Length: 212
Ligand code: DLZ
Image 1 (spheres, rainbow, N blue to C red):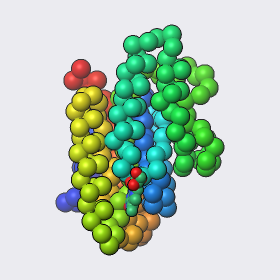
Image 2: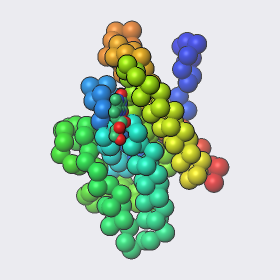
Image 3: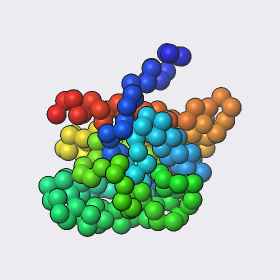
Image 4: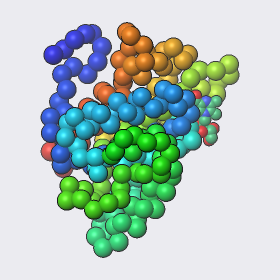
């Protein structure tokens, strides 16, 4: 049901059970990042994406998002073309510490779990069908914010087009923390944008399969 002027309309995220999705998030502004990442994971799971196929990575700040996404794309491409050594190569692409939640389990923090270990018949090897990049940039007193927002956005679009894999833009560029709380669903009148990003990843991952 379409509920308002803004927003993506009715979710097209129907059946994500065949998908493998990565979430790369910055650690700056963690109190906002955490609910956004959780919101994305919740919607991925609701669409049927298997927890084993949700891979979580973290980087220090939003500036680092493009290189992390680029290496994840590259790593999964290498893995896809190297059937026997896949685990090692994926391992090297997931060395970064995970901050918030493992996609699997109770959401324990800082346990280093990236949702890539453990044998499961549902675990899908090979490239990602979509990647969600999540960061929160809050405007400060200098023009630092504008620089990071501009180049990070451009960098993310560039890697998306270079690799032809949907990259969901989860970079909030906000003027103050209140705006962030609203968009992370932490206020009564707010809405968790991470949920929309999870839906978008499923829709775009499925569409990419059709387009191939
Ligand atoms: C340095 C910085 C500042 C001031 N603000 C933010 C922010 O609001 N959100 C964010 O994600 N990252 C911020 N950073 C960190 C940079 O993105 C980057 O991690 C560092 O400059 C190191 O390259």
